[in-house]
Image 1: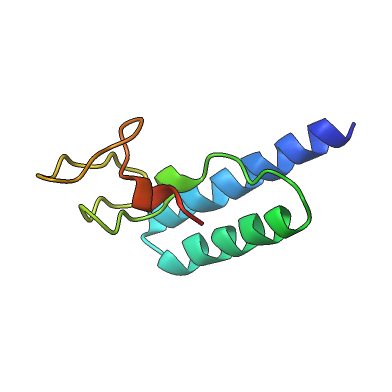
Image 2: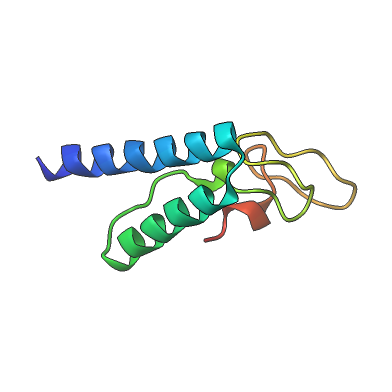
Length: 85
């Protein structure tokens, strides 16, 4: 039961990020990040939300893939800086 509720919460956060991309509303990304951070402080995994953040290294928009940059390593197709909360 608790696992199902956690999965519902993760899906809701992803939907908020998807709406932010669709409407180009960075405020929605910030709200979803706030929810994820609160979940982490309560001991819950926030899920894979890094792809919904803009990349500070290459400038990839939320919802898009990172771009290769000289002298910057990528892990699983993303710059590590993008994956940190």
